[in-house]
Length: 431
Image (tube, rainbow, N blue to C red; front, side, top):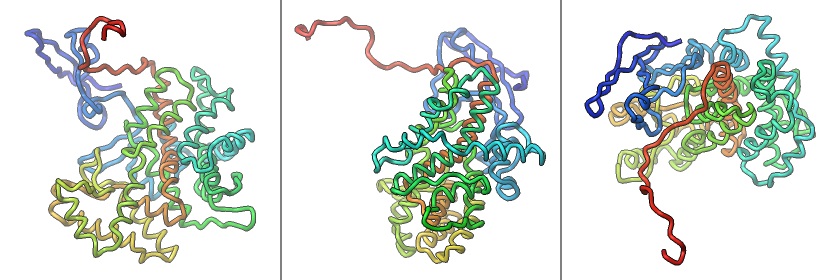
């Protein structure tokens, strides 16, 4: 529960004064509770993009953009990326604490035993065009889960919510991998219970029946880190979409499908793809000064992608970890002298030293390196956002579960109406 600070905020409207309580959380700025503003003063607040509005109370993730800090349930992301692994982070986000050995073993077993899809869902894929974007496939298949798993759609039953949680985390790697295989025209590869979560995903993506495929541990570690770093990110657009859909009482599969659809937007989930395309456009290190000049020119439409963040006003803590993985992966694959990485490293150096970038705090973010890693692994850019969706699923579910365990109301934002005032209908002949 938020703490009452004892302070109040005073609004004076049309000569009348109204007071509203100010609350504080455990971290972050205080908030003004304006829940009764309309009832008291007959006005709404106007906040496009909700940049100054707290839409909910949450105990899951905290971001301090000024410090460049990201905490999952209080744990710094750097510590989790170094010492933990994705399924342990999933447990932490879902249940609030790091698991004991027995709890971890039980959770991993439950996830592993649910990685297969209902066999009839194979046929669902064939309904898509072969050239369908993988995100379209993932969005459709996730939404269709409610048609295959009727025993876990009752949102008022805590056990069914738990079953749906495990199913979504377990099956998303299979759904995403099969979307990749379908686009590539290759046969689906079934999950294997003897592999870790990240190993299993890579195996389903890159193995073929004709030969044996061994998952390299460095690639598996990098994949696990990508999952971990993208697992949750507070009340972003897709998470808010999941919460808003959930507030209506929609089933969990429909809510997560809504999150997938929102993530598909290029302003949200497509940043790493846009960053990689920008690095390719620059091409070589000697072209960087030209593009830096274009980036500084306000009249030039060119923008440097992968720098700065709407929330982080300092270095993105996830980018530091991602850079380490990029070096490891490209070193393993023998492409440490890759021109794209060379451009990325030089751009990073400039961003940390150039007065223009430092003044505007345009530090490299997590998308700056993640696209390079995924391309090096063999994923086309069309798969970047589906992998993001796979990673973020646990965050969406954690936020959805938290919301469901509280007695909330259906989301209903208000508006500032600027359309026509009331007017009378005229018959077509009189118009």
